[in-house]
Length: 181
Image 1 (spheres, helix red, strand yellow):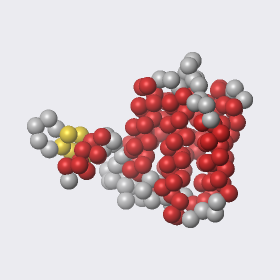
Image 2: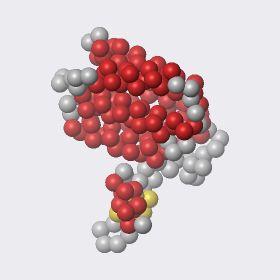
Image 3: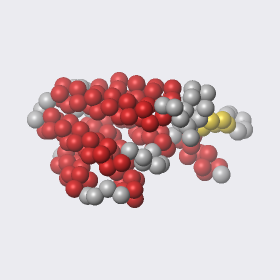
Image 4: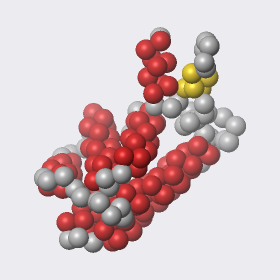
């Protein structure tokens, strides 16, 4: 149990108290927290692409492009949800790493850990997988062409679309006072 609590504290879900114990800190348990998370990502992730030292690792774009293309070609089944999430998280984290800014990278990693906690069950189906992959590939197209402002604009649109989808999925199921079902 202590290992589980330590892991939850590591992703920011549990706050450990100095002497003994701890409490859930509300990091992901409400529609308001999810809105705040997307608002934060909208500030941070496009900014990653605008950093003066932005440079993708050699071969990263080609590897991401291959993973996304393979995901588009594979018939979707629920067993692919974890691999899809991992690819998605690696995409966002790789762009943050390319920013050359350790604080931006740490922020995106933290959001990815929280998102992993929220994405245990994928309920959006194959159409959202297609949209996600297509949007990521368009961002890569801009980056490969040297158009970082265009990539940042596409990232913003990508995150706004994901936020709208996430909020719509929970509208009516959550209230501000109750945790997600």
